[in-house]
Image (cartoon, rainbow, N blue to C red):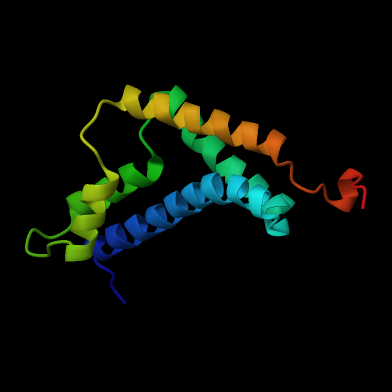
Length: 136
């Protein structure tokens, strides 16, 4: 079975979009959940995954690197047949996600978002798992 580079590029874009949605979701729902009393916002593992994801984004920004998913998608799109245009929805999503701004602007924003996520970790601390000495 052969999967075209354009199909793979679209799949990478979908994964990228899902990760971005996860990161934005966490940044919004944690303070909202604290206010509303939602216990799931203190879940250790999803909060750790959220902070870890934002750590990767911030480190790439500090190092002046583009996101590896962006680079992978661009590489796949470059290998795609000229006669195989990307799906229309992929074109729209690309237009929303990829802004023509200098990398340093994104770097500044990503570091600020990471610092906000660290603050959320302190302001709305996750429950510690029992193996870390959680107190029930």
